[in-house]
Image 1 (cartoon, helix red, strand yellow):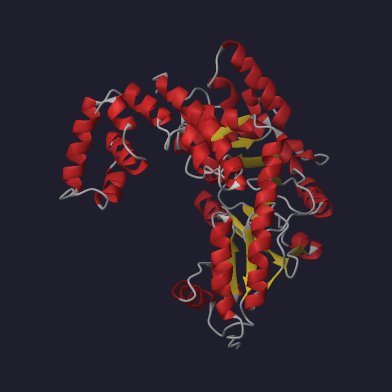
Image 2 (image 1 turned 30 degrees about the horizontal axis):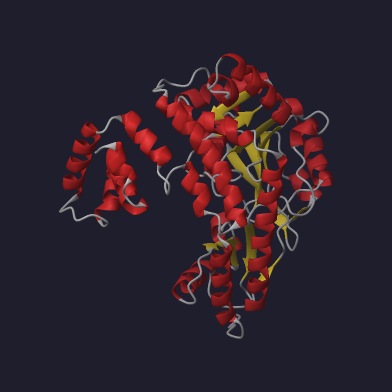
Length: 444
């Protein structure tokens, strides 16, 4: 297929042709329903033929130039939604950088643990990237930053590199589902500390009582998934003092740090004595709305970074080099990008929460992230899994059962987590559907 032929197609047809060029079995299976192929095998044979006939440079040029699919098209298609347009502008700029990197035909492993902002540039631009990094993060990329395949790999690499079998690690409960399994895969033992409703507060005595002679670390996630809690400076100071007293490493999941509606995000590493005992983990996924790109980073003191890098090297070797270049573009976005991002998510939060409350869900307004944990005890005698399935069927709204976020399923029996990283029209439709629940409560 020639470049001019591809550009002449509409968005859907051009998308099919581009996917064919990729030759991906997964995408082929998905696209089989959209093209009259007799089988996946037939589609793959066609894809192979297409790839052989189309030079990769032409494909990249076509992808970038197409008015509906390329970066310009991404901006134009979002014009009807200011928030989406702001979000897509960042994605489009990063995509441009990715395409340029691909066009360079550099398919090597990324060098020496990535440190996004140097390896992907040369000459003067490398210096500019280093300056930007140090202004944004305040760390030395040569010794303190390890680029990983998303924050999920960052956390398991950090635990594998810094914990020994039999060590204990404190985890606040409810928690993001990966923390417990990460510890178990490491050979460590998670010990859970309750966040207390309604505001998901920490009991200082319970936290101190959870520390034993075998405790080696603590996981801190703020803003918090699944509750949306933003830890206060006083709570973080309490955690820091505990770490200093007992020589603990703090593993901080900062992936929602730019999504704070009330209060402030205080990096634990900035508190006195914590810079050399904090492993800060973040990624592009949430801030730049590219969860599928899997580019993250772990920031830690040099002696801690050594352990993280050794584990990372054996887990995945390196993150995708072209997408690291895209990260340099995204992280150079002006402050106005982050301000618009927060404003857009605040509007979405304020659209969904009243609908949940009016439908009978008990909740505490989240101060950050894009989740809200609700209690269903006043609505139904069903457990969380049964009620979540029921909601999907009627009125047609999806939520995550609360037991997913607790060490013992019974602790989340009356909980459901809702997420609001959706378009406003989707949230408004969900609100209308939730209204059908009002007055139908069958509490235990």
